[in-house]
Structure formats: structure tokens, C-alpha cells
Image 1 (cartoon, rainbow, N blue to C red):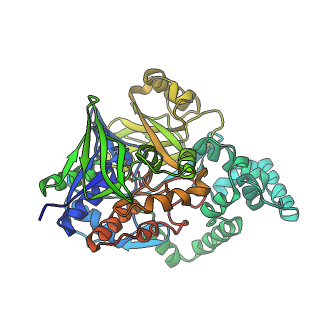
Image 2 (image 1 turned 120 degrees about the vertical axis):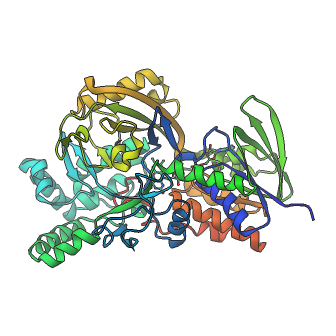
Image 3 (image 1 turned 135 degrees about the horizontal axis):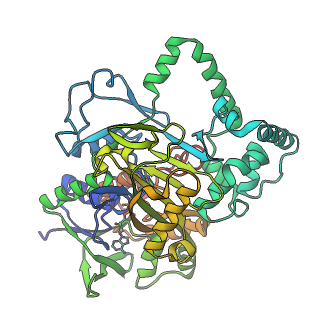
Length: 534
Ligand SMILES: Cc1cc2nc3c(=O)[nH]c(=O)nc-3n(C[C@H](O)[C@H](O)[C@H](O)COP(=O)(O)OP(=O)(O)OC[C@H]3O[C@@H](n4cnc5c(N)ncnc54)[C@H](O)[C@@H]3O)c2cc1C
């Protein structure tokens, strides 16, 4: 019998998982076609002169044991010291106990290892650090000052008496819950920075879906409970030891894991062809028969297969279909919107010492303890700042330097995207100097990395996305997987689970796709509580 093949579009987490799982669980041979020259998609790690940088830091944690075990199969958990092992990983309410002390590889000696990292992220606003998620503690109150606090209280009282009805936009939604002053202070600018759309043009359902976990009542309750717990030392101890937010992270960043998976796929007989952009899909009735590809030199080719798994953006997929696409499907696919992303890697002698900073012989001066910081300041465009030293010390070539990632949310063709790399790096460094985080003279080197379509947007024609989904699901041998592949805000774990579900369907001869779309329907989980991205 002729060997069966599955063609997989994209060598990101979804595509690579699909290829690996096909090799593990079926006799179908996977062929992965990847447009770029890099493995890992948005979860790749770029190596710039020995300094490694992610496209946004990627935490590894999942509520799914299957995903956690899958990751640890490739990169075993690092050895933990006595006293560390009673700590648990915690993430959005999910909890996992760590392995016993003394087991596992030592990251100083082994490269294939998953680190356990503490998480700290804060908000930088008014040239000060605020807790994240924002909580009503003394630090917040002192930072805001009495005048702002009074305004916040008054606006909250006002909105409780006369809420905006009906809620027509995300702006109305947020003001009704937090009052106008808090909305203006902590939500408006950041949301607009990330999405590039004013909050009054985003639907209120978007807020209901993504911000439902956060309420002021809950924040006050948390703050009060903390105060009470501080008196009882046992309770306080348990908070400190078990609820420290931790996550897993490969020694050399997420790209290390995906490159390792790619190596395993090749070793087992799977193929990964780089520099192959899928531009067309050929159909015969309700089946896909082949894809048309173009390589980096512009040569065109055609690849046939029995099954097709796609993690390429849905919009591009519909554009590439050769025939029979209803006008409405084309219209909705064209109306899908995305947010693009630029990150600037900045190598520094140190940071200007800011709150919580530390200096010492082993690290760069002023290194702050955060993994990342939300930059809320209104006079700069940078949205988030990663401190890669704190993701993994092995990401930095010289531990005496500080290796930052400055993140800009933008749109291909806008003023940020149009700026060429050199001027962009200067602009980014100037911004950090302006808000007092660095001294411009400490900049040693910089690199600019652009990533189109990082965020599939839940506005544009998204409210009619079902039309596209139904049409594409109708192709019995086509499976949409991953983030842009399904136009869904999927993290790595969801992308992995969608690929696993597609492979199970192929293995079991199932044409239905519902189990794939069922992944990540629990909206609360896949986002931070206040709607900020992860
Ligand atoms: C800033 C940021 C931070 C994030 N943080 C986290 C985090 O902390 N934890 C977490 O788990 N997840 C995080 N994610 C999400 C994570 O990056 C995605 O879930 C994951 O990368 C999606 O995998 P994918 O394979 O579906 O898509 P992608 O990673 O986008 O991979 C798709 C691949 O397909 C290729 N491709 C596209 N079109 C074609 C074509 N026509 N032909 C051939 N190849 C094509 C692309 O080049 C790419 O390599 C984050 C994302 C962002 C943007």
C-alpha cells in the first residue's frame, strides 16, 4: 500500500506538534512546509551575537497535564534544591507540585533542561512601579497620591449611581466597572497601545469575554484578606510558599524546545522543508488535493498529500483557495484583522537604578527583578519591556550586561513599522532613557525584530468568523490548527492541543472538527485577568 502523507503548513508549535504526533501515533508521514528560515514561529528564539531574545517572553505553563508532560518529555525539569521542591507551580488557579529535590539535570552542566522561574511583572506609570495585577495596597495608594485617589473614589461613586446604559463599547464596559478615573489611569492607553483602536470602537462583549475575572469588589476583598492573613503567620507562610507564581522556561528560550522537537521529527523520518511559502491550495470538490508553493528563490512547485493541516493565517489560506469560495466567505476572511509586532533587543551596561533594582558584582548594575514590565507611560510608544536576564540567565552572553526586549504593537505600514532598523533602535533607546529606566550612554548594542500577525484581532469581521469556519471545515481532509490558523488567541499549549486533536481525527478517520475548535473555549483561562496579553 502506498505511503500516506500529511502536509503541514508552518513549523511553529502547532505544525511541529502535529508532525511529531503523526510520527508517534500513526503511519502517516508528515511533510512540514515553513515559509521562513526559522523554526518555532512566534515561539522562536532569535540568537543575536549569543544574546537570545523571544518574540515576547513565552511562559511555559498549562492547565493540561498532557501538554506539561509533553514539554517535559523533551526538556526534563531542572534539579531543585532542598526547600524549593515544596513549592508548586501556579498559574491562573492551576497548581502543580514540583518534582522531588535532587532529581533532574543541573542547568549549569546540561543544555536540554527546563528551568523553573519565579514570575514578577509590574506596571511602570508616573515613573513609578505599581503591582501587577493592580491591587489596592499601600504602595498603590502612595504612588497615586491623595488627589488622584480622591478623584478615583468620586468617579467610582458617580458611576455606581448612574451607570452608562446601554453599554455600547469597551470604554462603557470599563467605566461602568472601574469608574472613569481608574479607566483613564490604567486601562485606556494600554488597551489602545496594544490594539491600535480606541476603546470606544471595541465592542463591550470583548471586555465581558476577556476581563470578566477582574472586579473592584474582588480587588478590595483580596487586599482585605491579605491584611488579615498577615497577622496569622501560618496562613501567611502558606501564601508565600505555595502561591508564588512560577513558570517553566527552556534554558535557551522557547525556540530551544521547538528546535529540539524539529530535530526529533527529522530523526524519525519526518520532513521539514524551510523557505517554502504555501501560496495556493488546489481543490477537488470538498477535498484539498495539493498546495502550490514558492521557495526563497521564487521557484514555484506543487506538493500533493492525503491530509492538510494548516497553521498559516486563515486570511491567506482563503486567498490561496483556487475555486469555489463563496463571496461572503471571501469578504469575511478579508475583513479579519491582525496586530503586528516589533521587538528591540537592547544590550546595556546596566540600568539606571530604579525601585526594586539591585547592584552587585555578579550582575549588571540596577538589574530589576521583573520578568517583564507593562509600560503605561503616556509619553512613550513602547508597550512592554522584557528583562531576559530574569527569564533565563543563560539567555545573556555576558552576565554582567543587561539584555532587554522592548515591545511595540503596531500595524504593517504604520509610522512605527515604516521606520528602518537603525533609527528604530535609536528611537527605542531614547524612549527608555526618557522615562528614566536607562542612561542612553549605557547602550552597547541593539537588534530590531519584526513579526507580522502576532495578534489575531477579535474585531473587524471576527463576529462573522463562523461563516469562514463552516466553509473550511467542509473540506474533509483539511484541519485548521494553532493561533492564526484558527484566528484565535491561542497560547502554545492550546496550539499544541489543537494539533493533537487534528492528529487524533486523522488516526481515527474522523472528518469532524469540533474537538479542535473546543480547545480554549474557556475564555477566562487564555488571557490575563485584566485583558492584558501574555
Ligand atoms: C508577544 C507574545 C507573547 C506570547 N507569550 C506566550 C506565553 O507566554 N506562553 C505561551 O504559551 N504562548 C505565548 N504566546 C503565543 C504563542 O506564540 C503562540 O501560541 C504560538 O506561537 C502559536 O503557534 P502556531 O504554530 O499556531 O503559530 P505560529 O507560531 O505563528 O507559527 C506559524 C508558522 O507558520 C508559518 N507560515 C505562515 N504562513 C505560511 C505559509 N503560507 N506557508 C508556509 N508557512 C507559513 C510561519 O512562518 C510560522 O513559522 C505569545 C504570543 C505573542 C505574540
